[in-house]
Every structure is written in C-alpha cells, then in structure tokens.
Image 1 (cartoon, rainbow, N blue to C red):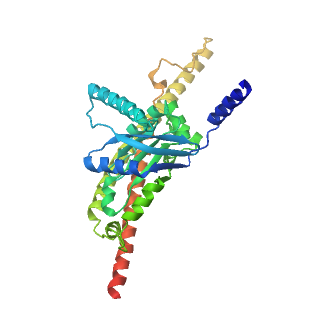
Image 2 (cartoon, rainbow, N blue to C red; image 1 turned 45 degrees about the vertical axis):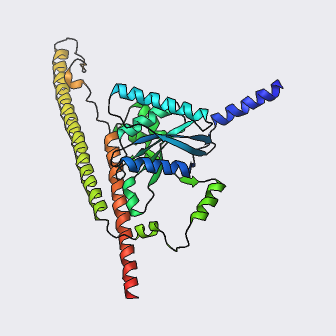
Image 3 (cartoon, one colour; image 1 turned 90 degrees about the vertical axis):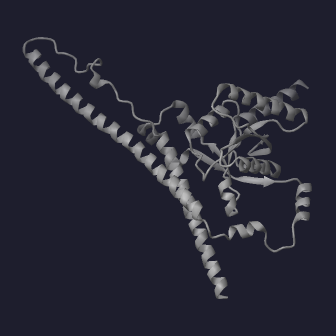
Length: 337
C-alpha cells in the first residue's frame, strides 16, 4: 500500500514538473454572458472581475466568474475589495461551485489594453498561480456584431526579462526579443452542457437570418474608424516622445565618450612627461571622475507596449475597412440584380 501511495505521489510530482503548454481556454457560456453583462453595464468605465475554473492539462477551463466592485485608488477601498474577493470565494465554495482562481477578465476600449499595469497584474498573479490568463472584452465592437473576446498570457521569455528588470537594447538583441513577443494569445473555445445546448436549439427561430446577421451588414462604421484614428495618433505621439528619450540618451552617451577620449589623451600626454622626468605614471582611469560614471539606458518596455497598441489599431482599421469594401460590393451586386 505504501509503495502504491509513493508511486502515485511520484507520478503527481512528475506531472507538475512537466506541465504541458497551455493550448486552449475553454469557457462556459454562462461565464461569457456574465462578462459581457458586467462590461456593457459599466461602459465606457473599465471594469475587472475574477475568473474561476480548473487547470486540466493543456486546457484551462473557466467555469464561472464574478465582478470586482468599482473602486477608486484608495487603500481602504482596496482592502475592502480584497475582503470582497475572499468572501465571494468562500460563499462559492459553500455552495459547491468551482472557486479556484485561474485569472481575471477586464474590459477595454478599442483594444487599448497593452499597459504596464496589465503586466504588473500578470506578475502578481504569477506569484501564486503558475498558469493564469486574462480575458479581454471590448464592448465597443458589439455594435458591429463582433464578440470581441481575447485570452492573453505573458510569454515565458518576457517574464524572464521582466524579473531581471533589464530592457536595454543589448539585452533584447541578445535574447532576440521583439515587441511581438510580450503577449501570447490563447484560442478561446466556448462550451455549454448538453442540456443548455438542447434548450438553445429549442429557442432558435425559423427565420433564415438573425439580428446579429443584420448588425454585421451595417456599413456605417465612421465613429469606430474615427476613434481608432484618434487613438492611433495619440500612440504615435507617445512613441515619438519615447524616441526622443533615446535620442537624448545617445547624444549624452556620445558626448561622454568624447570627454573620456579627451581626458585619456590628456592623461597619456601627462604620463609621457612624467616618464621622461623619471616619475611614476598616473592611472589612466579615474572612477571618481564624473565623466566615467555610466549613463543609465532608458527602458524599452514602454516603447514596446506602444508599438503593440499601434499594431492593434492598424489591424482594427484594416479589418473594418476590408469588411466595409466587402459589404459595398455585396450591396452593389444586390442592387444590380
């Protein structure tokens, strides 16, 4: 009996040591509806909530969720929020509902979620949960007939760099790290029980098209494109400011190197004179001299995040414009017929 228990524990420890990579996030339809309801009720205010479920092999199952109360940046209110989460999870455990935390969800506006705060939240979750995800929902795309759900996690290479706190150009080139390697998007699979699927089949109408199909045919996307362009212009301004920081750093670095070369040339000339006079030469490095103090290189993390946002906005503009052209060609063909 002891041998069987020992082998069982060894198998568990082996499975934990060699955990398969996360392939898919399977989320219950009820949890999706809760997320959509919470985000749409408080839009355009950004809200967050807790994801509950199970980590099974390469699948992360999200079976339930609950919203966080909207609070200001105040320590007492933040403490109340933490107590609220613990109380909610205790109540769910009492009614035999999954209360294992597997991540959190949050709303966004036009996909502008790539921020330092999101990364810090990920790192805080990673301290206690090895595999967690963040589900992003964009309620602004619902008017276009799109269910804008996205599951994200931080890449292992980025977490290693973030823990080291080294985002210099040399380190990023050494690791062959680019701005596209910060986040990993995990495919989402919405699942329902057989009973719920049968009930939804009964609710389906005999109409050939639904309201969602009509929403997808709307060609008036001017506000969506305008907002994307405004966000894109703001991101380009922020990226330009980040580039100015690096230009200022490289100017100071080249100025310092010129000062160091001039000082070394002067010291070598002085040492030649001292050797001719039979005196001991002076050292060619002086750590107390301020011109030898290294200039810290600015972190490239902020510029990487801004580049991610620029890519996201460009992709959204390209996607909406392409869909509009398809609708226009479809409408033209219908009118001709």
